[in-house]
Every structure is written in C-alpha cells, then in structure tokens.
Image (cartoon, rainbow, N blue to C red; front, side, top):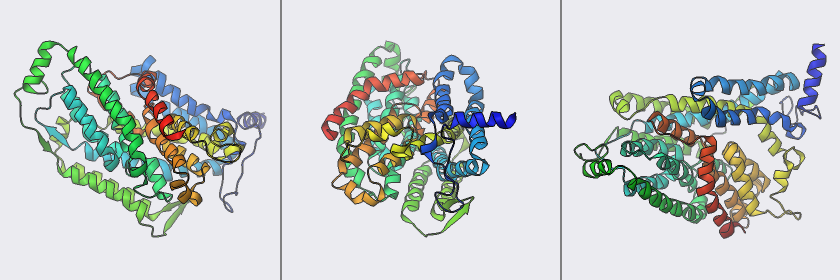
Length: 484
C-alpha cells in the first residue's frame, strides 16, 4: 500500500520518472533537469507567494513565524525529492547549494551588514530633496566599489535619520533600493554577485566599467531626476512648521551640530571585505576539499574565514552604544538568512530545468533568446535574464544565460564580437534585481531596517507596482538604445 502510494507520488512529481546518477562523474549524483516536471517548482512558487501575501494578509503571524514558513516550503521540496530520487541525490543537492551558494552568500551579507552597521553619521543632516538626492547619488557611485549590500547598509540609516521627521518618506526608501541596492552595482565585479561570477569565468575586471557605464547612466540619471521632482513635491506637502524646523535645525529641529563620523575603523574594514572577495577571485592555489562529492576550494574557505574575522573585529572595535544609537539590530540579517535559505533550496529544480536548456521544461525560455541560425537575440537575453533575476537568484540566472550564450569557452567572443549579448545578460541581471524585494538580498535588508524605523513600506506587489511605473519604461528605453 505504502509502496504503491510512493510510486504514484513519484509519477506525479516526475512524469518521466527518471534522473541521471553518475553522469557528472563516477559515483557522483547528478540531477538531470530535463527529467523534471513543472510541478517540482510548486514549493518555490509557494515561498514566493508567502513572501508576497503573508505580510499583507497576516502581518503579525508573518513577523513571528516567517522562519517556520520558509522551513515548511523547503521541506515540501526536500521530502518528496528524497522519496523520489533517493537520499544520496537529495544530500548532494542540499550540500551543493549550502556549501557553494548559500553559505558564501550569507557570510558576505553578514560581514557587510555588521561592518556597515558600525558606521554612524553624527550631527545635523537635513532631509531635504537636495540632501536626499545627494545621498542616493553617493550610494549609486559607491555601490560598484563596495558592493550593493555594503553601500546600502552604510547609507540607509543616515537617510532614515535625516528623514525621520517626515510623514511622507516611503518613496525615499523605494528609490534607495532602486539605485543604491541594485543599479549602482553595475560597474565592477565587486558591485553585484552576477558580475563577480562573470569575472571568475574570465570576463575582464573592468569590462563592466567600460560597457555598463552608459546604460547605467541612462537609467540612473533619469531616476535621480524623477526622485528629486517627486521628493520636492512631497516635501512641500509636509507641515510648514516641521519643514521650517528641519531647515533651521537639522533632522528633528534641534540645534544644528557639525557632521561627524563614529566607527570610522569600519570604513577600513569594508575595504578588507572587498579585498577578501577580490582575493578569492584572483588567488588560485589549486587545493580543494571534497564533502560528499562537493568540491570546496581553499580560496573560498579562506574568504569565508576572513569575512567572519572582519565581522568579529567590527563588533570588537565598535562601541555598542554607537551601534544602539545607530538603530542597529540583528533582525534584518536574520530575516534574510531564514527566507533565503528556503529560496535557495526550493530554487534547485528551477535552476536545473534552465540548465537543461532546450531539453528542459523551461525550454521555451531558452529558445526565446536564440535565432534559428544560432545568433543571439540580445533584447530577449536582456528581458529573459532580467525577469528571471527578479524572482530567482540573479547569480545562477546570470550563469545560465552566460552559458547559453557560449560560456567560458567563448568568453573572448562575448567580450568583443558578442559584447552586446554579454551586456544584455549583465544589465538584465543587475538592473532588474530592483524589480522585487527578492530580486537582490539588500532589497530585503533595506526594507526590514526601514520597517523597524517605522516607515510604512509597500507590500510585495505594491513594490512591484513602483518598479513597473518607474523602472520598466527606462528598461524599454535602454532596450531600444543598446539591444535592438
């Protein structure tokens, strides 16, 4: 009876009821994405809908139980997967995503979050349209050189402090996510994980700087201008007394004080974070360790140890009082850690299907980016990479389309003859991470910090509404300028 039920379940979950074991090497489990049915994506869809709907329909329940909900969807994938394909393949896939993707991802975010949270801007910073636009511009410039997470965590608290007196400030955080947490990270491999993966695959370090600069300007400059006009309009709607007090005395109308910086040592530590990440891309000792067929390279282990050490130094060298005055708490990074653990696990079948190319259940997506004669369709690469990066992790999505376009063997061609294709993939992955809260990890962290400070942030679909109105028209413009 039980065996029969399991057989039915297996047939449901995989209509072709097959997976490849040993295809990637003798004795190495290997998931064949071509043999997966779309039903395997249901847990991933479930966690996305939970993130979208629970904060809207049951905010208190979500606040206290989001970790359990994330674990539920992870188990909703892992248990049937184990019963269908065996514990060996399930363990391999779980270790692979944990050791090579999730742990590096969360360690980097943790170090940037901890270090940037130790920097406190003191003094009177007025939340005026000019000041707010200046902060967004600064963050957009910094994001490519210290990462979108580093720049976002460094500047979100000062911008929230400067606007704490305002009743209308949601738009400030939304545009901050657009520019600082996403679009600003497009000029170097340090800016955003997809570009770093491209660097590891052979793309020159300064290729994004020279090729992504103009598209970034085409998107960022109008966004800054739109923000200034919108912020000016909403600023004038603030009570006249509050505006007068702000303009006379600073953030909350107190006597103006000179701007200063506490925790300056953390600026040096941010440089250490950048150096540790860069080191792992340059230093290749050729030493690796195998954990149940998963190869973990020495340079990556060294990077994680250095990053955790830098985070620890930041905690030791920064005053706890200064962190408290900065509004620092661990909740945002805990929220990201718990939710993205579920996302990274449930995304396994979706990525496998994409990697299967035209043989997988998502074959139409792959076919849509290539002409019949094999030539790339650049505007489709831009939109396919971008839309999927809005809902999937943009790093593996970048790799899928990078490989579809030729991958590492054709990297020289991608940087020259097919540079528009590589540009389309890069811009789609980085720019459209701003479309949803889950498009890029800093989006979630910024939202969480803002909500802790009492800012009423849009729901998941509400934020998508903002991005559709302000970002999509600009993406259409750069499509016509660069990809058609």
